Amino acid sequence: MKRLVASNILLIVLLIKIDAQENPKRFVREIISQGTGIRFNADVLPSAVNLDWTIAPTDPAEFFELQRSADSLNFITLEKFDAYAGETHYKYFFRDDFPLKKANFYRLIAINKGGNDKRAIDLYVDFNSKSKTIKPTLIAQGTQLRIVNSDGERYQLLIYDLNGIQVLNEVVSSNYVNFPRSGSQRGIYLYKLYDMNKMNIATGKLVMP
Image 1 (cartoon, helix red, strand yellow):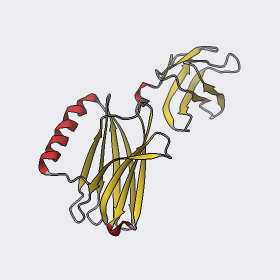
Image 2 (cartoon, rainbow, N blue to C red):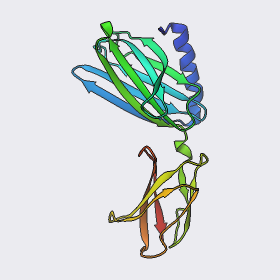
Image 3 (cartoon, one colour):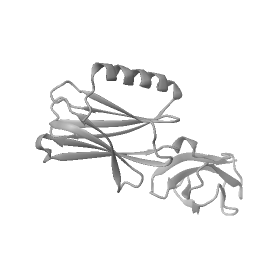
Image 4 (cartoon, rainbow, N blue to C red):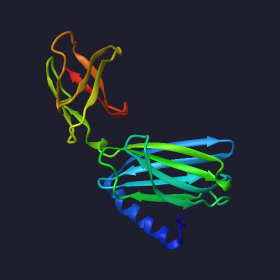
């Protein structure tokens, strides 16, 4: 069981201050019910994930267990933390220096006194999400679109016109896909890119002048 003493808190604050210059991508989940509340956040950095959470002063948790999974089914415990019930909006920190290369499912379990009551809040983090883009954005019929992606995984690409009509729905197993060669009109198109877990990892627009 880990207790955060003053020296540990100072060290963690310094680490976060240094990494804040790396423009992290932030993921947030929050659960509020019957006077209790947990806000769970993740800042994705180039080589690590900073996790933090805040509890309400009246939250009955006695301790927390932080877990991680690659598939949202099989979890391992990263750390356990004592809770500080009654203190004003106490904040907890954990730095994952070895995140999984692709999907990271973090689970925070709040366990009440006696261990009989457990509450879980899940947070999905795509460690490589910042690298997923589609180029070029200025297109014509039959333009070859490149998915800027270094991991070689399969993705589902959906493209719609501004009327909500779907013009492309394709599972991409390489880094390239062709925009439809016929039937497309000039204008703006919106795309969504999903991984095989149905998580939306990129959105954007394409312009056909």
